[in-house]
Amino acid sequence: MPAADGSAEEFRRRGHAAVVGASLAGLRAAETLREEGFAGTLTMIGDEPHEPYDRPPLSKQVLLGRTGAGDTLLPRRRALEARWLLGTAATGLDLAGRRVRLAGGEEVRYDRLLIATGTRARPWIKETEATLDGVLTLRTADDAARLARRLDARPRRVLVIGAGFTGSEIASACRERGIDVTVAERGPAPLVGALGGVVGAVAAELHRAHGVDLRCGITVTALEGDQAGRLRCAHLSDGTTLEADVAVVALGAVRNTEWLAGSGLAAGPRGVACDAGCRAFDVHGIVTDDVFVAGDVARSPHPLFGYQFLSLEHWGNAVAQAEIAAHNMVSPGPERRPHLWLPAFWSAQFGVNIKSVGVPPMGRELAVVQGSLAERRFAAVYGHQGRVIAAVTFDHGRWLPFYGRLIESAAPFPPDFAQVDRAPGGPRPIPAEFPDPALPTHGPTVTLSGYAPSERRVTFVPARV
Image (tube, rainbow, N blue to C red; front, top):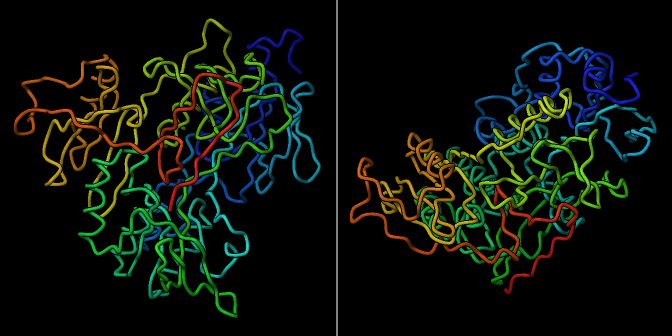
């Protein structure tokens, strides 16, 4: 066991590290622990029975039939020499006793703990309808395998509920396979929660140009099955009925924090609050020194964005944050580093590569600085309080590092540069048209969650039909 003072060197030599969450962030953190000289006991806990795998291919290559869901395992950088507890969910945390409680009744003791439990797909709101044969979600490898088999069977029509990034990628895969698809989106356009209404209108044109039956400002009020329990049709808020064999619920993600209820950590629907060094806060706003957080489940402050807590659903963030968390777990205070990764995201749909950097939902205005919206090939920047806060590109991704540097340097908005292929007439700011943040949307990959680490409330205002 480590020395009584819990020194980093003693922990590095013979401590016990537990990682809850055996996916991308958990795996990269474990590898980094070993790479940084951690020689102690390592326990990996994951609720899925599979070894860590890559999620981005699930909504792309797997649904297109180009690879199997079982062929997406993440490459290993090194041997971990770990105890793996897969298919075993964590059910509770004893902070004082430094123990993780598991579903089977076992307890795992730790000296330092990394929470990397990520998110799960938000299920359909009506449980009896969610169990109909043909009602699916897409988050895990098993989800992707089930949906791919359904698409292989050539359904008459697929209904996608929600036009965020996941919903849009599912619709794109359906059309590439020649399958009729209807997308129901409660907002005014696809991707509106992540990129705003102006860019969302371009995304809507993409959907319709590729044969998607896109219905915005519409919600699904009920899913109906036949006597055998198979999905038969969906009822929509405009009074219409849509026949469909498959309905994919793409209503965003739920952060896996329920197992931390009553633990004393600042954990809730928005994630687990941590400082820039990935150390978890308790409910009183006091930072812990033996519990760390990384990946989609983390919410941490960032100086570039007013020190607001950000919850990020980004592949790159999960890797970078996991590596920082692991480094800080085995390092003394003066050697610890902050996690200051610039949010970045990408999506491929309908033959277009969409990339973003920064925090678009913070921007109230938008300026097209290269290309044009009409051509659906452009670069646009978002402004916040007179500075560039984010950028998005459609098939213009090679410029994204340039706009990332503008964000990091707090460049003025709207930008003015002579060396870049500017849009005709120069960049003119227009409203970005983000929806009311009190309304739930189906796809923001960055969530601003205020300043208080102990805030656990989320309030949504029902949309008017």
